Amino acid sequence: MMKLERVVHTAKVHTTGGRDNGAARSSDGRLDIKLSRPGASGTGTNPEQLFAAAWSACFLSAMKFVGVKTKVAVPPDAAIDAEVSEGTNGSAFGLAARLNVSVPGMERQAAQTLVDAAHQLCPYSNATRGNIEVTINVVS
Image 1 (cartoon, rainbow, N blue to C red):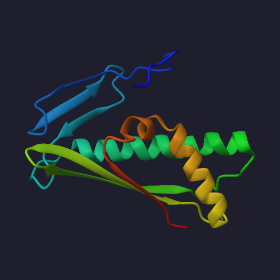
Image 2: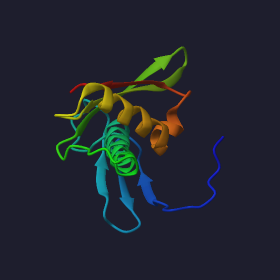
Image 3: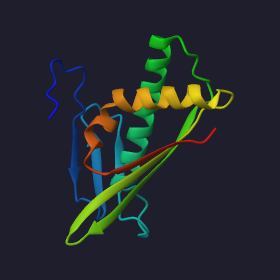
């Protein structure tokens, strides 16, 4: 288990109702969303969408961090299409994730090296490594 030596930021969110017409609001008010089950008629989002957004945003920042450290220019139009699936394995629920990373104009091997380094750095990658099925594809 990784223990933090120094806390850089702590997000605080109050959630009620869960997936069924729930709501989540951050302590600073920047996040204020409705929650609903995937495919339900509600207007809210679901935890898998939130996780996909959070991981892909963090991963892209990790790529930029690695780029600065290694003097590799990350294209400004780099993007990630994240997919988080919820499913079952016997009687337990679980997740699987795919990050499809687009780095237009970057040579494929350089892009792969950048993505591999970002995967070692990103806290979401570190949290999921060995816990869920993760696939990371360099798509351009």
